[in-house]
Structures are given as structure tokens and as C-alpha cells.
Image (cartoon, helix red, strand yellow):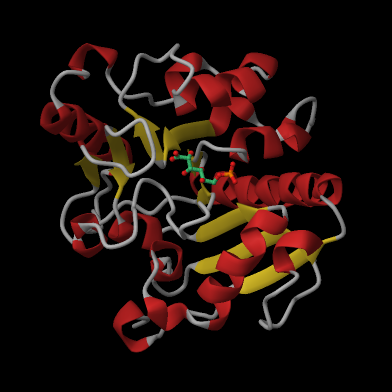
Length: 261
Ligand SMILES: O=C(O)[C@H](O)[C@@H](O)[C@H](O)[C@H](O)COP(=O)(O)O
């Protein structure tokens, strides 16, 4: 029997692109390949998206005939606790950058419940229940297994709404948790937890620009610092990729791998 207990996580794969346009194109190809494998296996594609600059990095999916939008089931890695049309909403950012431009059924995009914004506990429980419903299988795993999770990294090494030195870094039970004290505004968020992120089949961090160079070096060359982005270590057989541009990769000594599908 293949057991994750007997396999250490595989090392992250660092892919550095000449510029962000090449990255965008390659990321779209990578996503399409993940989508095809998932649909061939189980007829749908489950993906979790982040905010920040990530939604715009998905522009290679627009007008792309290989994308089977009706098979996509989209969740948010984290979400700011604001109305869905608020300027801070990750759902709004993804809608403006992507969903408004492609034929994805709106029922396949799982947002937070806008009726529950005043109760963080209920709000995160409700999102967890959606995940339980959508991922429940006969052989129900302890954690959901996303086909693909796309992450960004903040300049402090945070990812999702998992911030340095926060108690949530040690959450090992819940699937969705809430944050009331995010050091970056807005303070209230909900977030997938590390065990959920780490159970995904594929995880891709996207990081571009020279502002990311120092922190990327720390995450890849000194992962033992335990910064949130260094805690993304997929459970076997999951694989973690870093899609970066040359500016972001400039300081890291970590070996680079050429992009291939
Ligand atoms: O939660 C937030 O306040 C931001 O959305 C943040 O998590 C962002 O995603 C990262 O800082 C990476 O940002 P970029 O992808 O824009 O560099």
C-alpha cells in the first residue's frame, strides 16, 4: 500500500520565467494539463484561488478553447470578510479579472455566505460545510484533496491568510478557519488551513517582481525558519511548484527546473 506516512514531501520545483507574460502563458498550459487529468479521472476539476495579483495572472485562460469551464469547481484559498462586491473581496477580484470573461457557471464558484459576515465562526463553519459537501466521497479522506491550489506570497512570507507567528499556523484539525487580527488589512478573513493546502495534488505559488526576491530566497534556501510559505509541504504524492520571474528568483540559490508539461 502506498502511504503518505512513508514518503517525505517532494522538494519544491522552482521554475523561473524570463518575464511575467511567459509565466502567464505557461501557467495557463499547466492549469489546462491539471484540468485534463482531473476531468479524465473524475469528471470535474477542483481548484482554489488566491487574491493579490494572482487573479490577473490567470489571463492566459481567457478565450482558451482547452478550458472546460463547466467542469471547474472554484473555491477561495482565503477571503476577506467583506461584501462580495467590495473592493477588498477576492471574489470580486477574480470575477473582474477572470469569471466575467469566461463561461463559468456561477454556481460552480463557491463564495463565502454574504449573510454571515457578522459572525466569523458561523461564516467559516459554513464554508467548511460547503467543502465537506463537495469533497465527500465514499472513501472520505480526512482532508479534501484539491486538484490544484494557486497561492501568492506576501512580503512577510505569509500565504493564504496564514501570517507569521499566528496561532493558526498550528491548526491541524479544521479545514477552514477565521482570522480577526490580520496584520494586513482588512483584519477579518477566512482561510483554508495548512492541512487542506498540503493535501492538494498540485500547489503552485506565483511570485513576480524584485520585491519578492529576498523573501523567496528565505523560503527556498532556509525553509527551517518556518515562515508560512515554507510550511506549504504537500503530502505525498502532492507536488509544489514555484512559478516566478527572473526578478523574484534573483537572490535564491535554489536549483531551477526548466518548464515542461
Ligand atoms: O491577503 C492579502 O492581503 C493579499 O491578498 C496577500 O495575501 C497577497 O496575495 C500577497 O501579499 C501576494 O500579493 P501579490 O500576489 O500581489 O504579490
